[in-house]
Length: 377
Image 1 (spheres, rainbow, N blue to C red):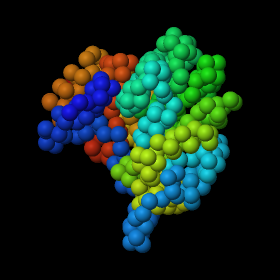
Image 2 (cartoon, one colour; image 1 turned 90 degrees about the vertical axis):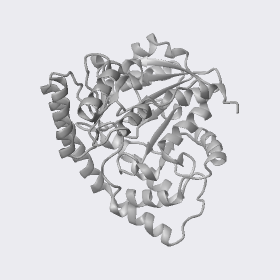
Image 3 (tube, helix red, strand yellow; image 1 turned 120 degrees about the vertical axis):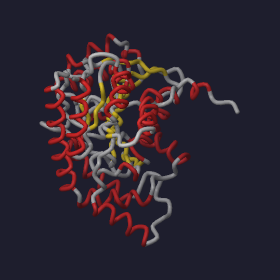
């Protein structure tokens, strides 16, 4: 059977390869998984169960249940985002589907797409699956892993059709302050770029407020914002996300969505609807716990003498390991049974770092950090 060239050219996930190594061992503490250790809020789970008991198992509207889209429109207003639930919101099977739809809707074969690095592993393959070519824009610890106008210019992003950003960022935990966000917006306007902005960790921002790039002057009409319920509501397995975009862009993404997915899972939509209606306190509690863990893990790495940028959001820290990150991660796993992800998995700019998730309980985190300390000594 012939496999399409564009599929063969994309390597397997580096994260997956490392997880397979970890699965070969017993009693491993995994700090590599990008999902909360909390269960979805009970009210959301109850709503899902109730929808099943009432036989709500049919398709919904392609764009998602209207009452859910209305609730999403209300939810995103906390970040100053104002979108029409009928024309500008598309409910998807996870934010990952929304990203894929955008790549296929806005990238033609041969187009170039700028993407910051290090960043989430799915963007570059998504560009390639759409037939595009990535332009990698490095971010560094010196700028707290923030994009700058100069970095975009120097990487050749002016020639791109689109720019992919992710903040708070996976894997660095960095976000973008107002000054740098305005630089990115200015660059996008100057060079007529479509911006694909993954803001799924927006609700997990610490020490400040999240600002969506779509709220800046001249940006709403050129931006697609992605978000979802996996991270803030600990609903990873229910696979529900959404995209916010101007009507023409939403229609384009929905044209693909209606032929491939038809509609997002109905049970998950009922759970999400209840999450938005009654689970704000759960989100606040989880964010408080993540923040406590963030401060603990950061302080432990610094006590070990490992340079570590202070993460501003999400649930990852990104310490420097002082050498070959893949070898460090493999040796750590082999000798101490602690799994972390090599930073180079997230692009060349991540080399020499480790992605460490603190979405685990404090007892587990303390034991893992003790083992890492023993390893580096």
